Image (cartoon, rainbow, N blue to C red; front, top):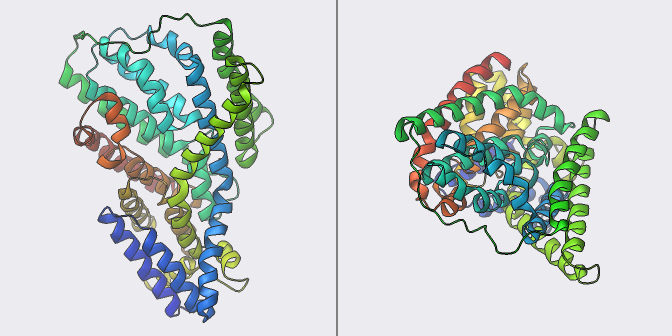
Length: 455
């Protein structure tokens, strides 16, 4: 272990400042940039070199996240193309017919949101599912506030915290934790994800049943998805082809054991090809040229908007990982967080209980910024640090931090993070956060208890 020096303590102090800043619900980019500059200055001893370190750290972080940004941009571009042609409505039409009462509507809305979140991410899925299925759910007697809860819990909670197909969240956490196989992290986290999901959904459903009762209360709503124009054969073709292709992707992943970047590449390539097919079906091949450009632009704007702050925050926390620090600083750099963790293990008796507790607390605090992703580099780095200090399952510990960060900050109990769902369902974000907080808190508590036995 490296001898702790002033640079270690300064880095630790900046980490504390970043966490406190998050706790006050403020953006953390300035302290992260300042932290990179200060660490670069202390390490190199040169003002010019420290300025270069800031840029190099951002470039290194951007390269680390580039594949994730790319696949998300392409998936959103595909989603926009499907929405433009109207194929998205046809894809969920059979499920809309199943909504016969509030209970069925709650789970139908939730599971469709989960499915779409896995393949197009929760943010575009909110608009997609909300515009198509919400009127049917309300007609079945499901109150708007509980429709928002279902979409929130299943989408931004279950969907985003697992992210099995796009693998954005696991890739970020795995990269910071030094885990090469992203799918290995996802599989290790599966038991914790199941516990968190089952507990949260069950309590939410029971609360909904207690509040609404068993009798459906039908309400008059205007179905904005209806149109006088009948879908063409091409629209039906796209609506059937799209899910079949993604099902085929899943089969190929399983058969050929595609993991991590290989699986992401398959999803991303599929998304861009579907987008092209949809655009050609909607327009003729000549006119589709501009439309494809528009969809790609919209997708990349969305991806950059989501990940721009994550790149900056990740650049700072990557300095805590030895492998990334050596890329940013030089080959002699060590992992600052790793060194601190090893020193802590020698002075304080660490065990699974305090380590798991610290991981969850840090994950929850970093989620207060409402991003859900900005804290992933930190919890990943902490998992790597703790696993080097004590005998503990690094993948499971990383997954615990990932789940906590996203369930808190990804958009379930932070009011400023759940505005899209609240807006679609026309409910107050504070009211939605109040409905979510008891189920999510209970889920996190049970998940913590289970994690103590699995770590």
